[in-house]
Image (cartoon, rainbow, N blue to C red):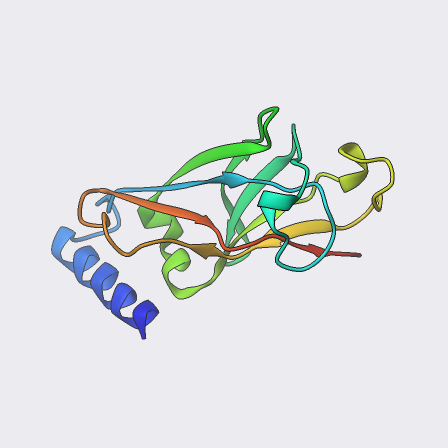
Length: 140
């Protein structure tokens, strides 16, 4: 239900602003990448993944990217117009950097993937902040 409300709000904003040239604001995504396999990995109990490449992929396209710092943290920004799929669940964070780079005992192939979550407030303020819902390991 909430995603339908957000989608309608975004569509209404696009109509009010008019045309493809209008910018709806900025999408900011930040979080911490774990160095671990599993499903919905708890970042509070997991080691972090420094120097990992994180991509925001919406409907199969890379919309933004960032590299984690030594604490495994990242922040990236995208034009909200180019990331509208985030509001209907078609965006995810993807880390293709092999886990073996942060722990030699982990698999050399596979990726970490997380859907996005965040409050519906601040959309009208021009900045919409989202976070990883929880990374899960996907082997190849």
